[in-house]
Each structure stands twice: as C-alpha cells, then as structure tokens.
Image (cartoon, rainbow, N blue to C red; front, side, top):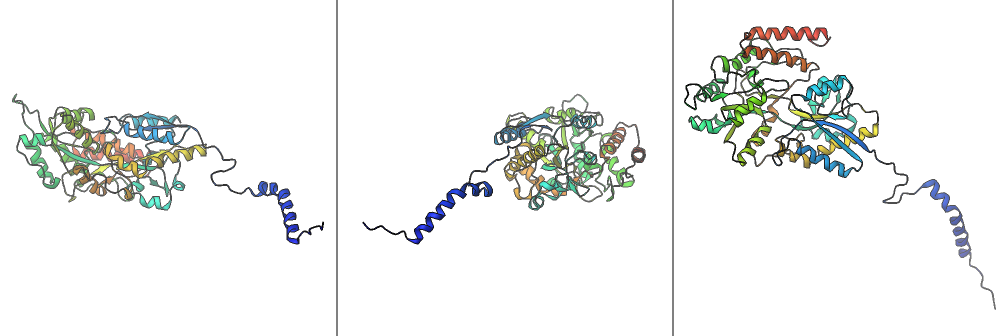
Length: 451
C-alpha cells in the first residue's frame, strides 16, 4: 500500500498547535485577558459603621420626625451590605451645643448637618469634597445651595435641601373678625399693623384680650423675625463681611419689631421671653394668634392637622414691605451635610457615596413629605399640587442667606440678646444696637478676626 504524504500546510498547523499548547498558560499569566462579568482579585468594599447626626424633619406621611431620613438609611444599607449608618437624633435647640461639645472634645461623628456652617468650616476639621463633584454636578446645584457650602475656594459639604420662612395666617380668626388677608400675600408695614390691630381682641368676653394679631420667639439659629428687622434696608454685614447692623435702617427695623409689642400691643405679653414651643402652641394648638412667622415645614404640619379635623383654615403671606421696597426673608436656606476628617480614605469614599445617595433626583422629589425644597435645578418644581409651597418655591431665589462669617454664632448671640432686652423694655433701640456693636467689635478684636 502506498504511503500518503503529509501536505506542507498540515505540518505547519501541527507545529503551531504544539507551540500554543506549550505557551498558552504563560500568555494568560502575563497578559490576564479580561473576561466579561469576572474581575480577578477584586478588592472587597469597605464595611463598617458610619456615625451620622441629624435634625428632625416632620414627615407628613408617617408623622415621624425622622421617618424621611430613616427610610433612606435603610435603602442605602440594603444596597451596601456590611455598611451601617448609626443615626443619632439631635434637636434644633440642643444640636448646635452637642456638635460644639463634640468638636471641642474631638468626639464628633463621621457626618453631621454642618456643611454650610462657616464657623465649623474655618476650624479645618471637615473634609474638602471638591474632588467628589463633577463639573456637571456643580452646575446642576442651585447657586444659593452651592454658595452655602463654598468657602476659601473649596466645597465643604453636600447640599441636601432648602427652606425659608413665611408668614402663616389663621383664616378662621381672620374670618371671625371679617378681616381680609393681604392681596397676593403682600402688605406694607402699616397695612400689616392695621390688620394685626383688628385681630387683637377679647374672644371670651372677660374684658381682656386673649387673641393676638402676632406672636413669635427669639432663639439661636432662628430667623423668623429677621424679615422685619431688615425690612428698611439694614444689613448685618457689608460685602467684605464687616459688621454693619447699626445706624438708622437697623434702628428703624428693630423699632418696628418692638412696636408690635410695646406700642401697638398686638402680641402676647411674653413675646421676647417665650420659648419656641410656647409660641407655636399659642398659634397651632390654642389658636389664639392670627399671624405667625415660621419655617415652611409648618405648612405640612398644619395640613396634617386639617386632615385629622384638628386644624384650621390658613393662608400664607410675605413679610411686610418696609423702606427697602420689597419683602425680605432671611434664613439658613441650605441644609448640607459635612464629613469630619477621616483617616480611612476608603471609609471617606463610602461617606461620600451615602451623601450622594441622599441627593438623588428621586429623593429630592420626596422632599414634599417634609416641607423642604430641592437643591438641584434638574429636579424642577416639586409642589405643583400645593399652592402654598409652590408660591414659596417660586420666590425662594429672593430669600437672603445668613452670611458666611466665621464668628456668626457669637455675633448672632450678641444681636439676639440685645433684641430680647428691647422687647422686655430693658433698653432703648439705639442703645441696644450700640451695645451689640461694641460687644461684637471687642470679641472680634480679642479673637483677631475681621471687625
């Protein structure tokens, strides 16, 4: 039988196959080709506990003070197995003191609502977070929100929500006395006073007034009365952050506030020394106050009471127009979370991930549950079905933010103390403002800060 000859191509194929069999393992070792869905030697994500402090926000759906944030924490933990967010509730009154104490003793949490607090930013204890924002993300934030967390050329916090103050009117009391609310929610100071006079009266017939046109309170981090204080054009600081709350426009603004109690007697006698809870009780529960300035969160609270049959009909209005020529609303408009210095950079990454999680568009839209407004332009107007909040949202750009001053906590304390003394008839307006100025300048001189 004649032997078959191997063709040259077949011989070449056999040689190449032998080379591939022998060299193949070395190719895989050195070149490690990517296989979709499989990444060799994948590093495990950080796992552990993140301590988180936060203020209460009334959830209109659940009625809980922390329902909104707790629901987000649970979702984040579910999406990130092994990460636990340890929430510590803090009150609006006690919270700033707790945070200050924690900073002094170096026992602060990983995350707290301090991202827009310049007094804390200037202490160099927060993580700068510029690197975690894309240019597109920065451009999507509303200017007020991004400005609130920006200082010394860096970004120090993650804006989460916005709010402001408004005046809420008890329309049951207005209707009882046949008083019309201000047209389009706007009134001058004289119209404001005339209305309050008509709404201060003896309801139970015992010869003493028991319903009042106006009530409020004075406290740290509360700016519910500042729309009146600044209505004649006064400013707390000039553009260079030099203290300026004195002189004629400041005196006339403070005088207008004082006159409500001391001249026109349209407030309860304890205005100036009452607590926030007592003032709110007089308006919301006892229904003995016609006009009450407060944060937008209150609209949800009052709507909830209406649904339960325990509330009253209400309207909203702007602060009275003074010499400035338009209504003024002053607030710490932006709530933002800051991250305290982290030694573990992987943990820092997870902290950032959590705060970005909170500011997703879908959760920004859920701010309707707690009476807050979104910090992102792309979210749009979220209160199309709530005429009160929709009106406020449209005017939010006109609200004034509390100035970014490193000594603001101390400065505010001096001012509020002097305002209280005027309302208690312990000082005249010009004397109180001059004393506040002196104390503030002395404090800043002692602490080598700008006058």
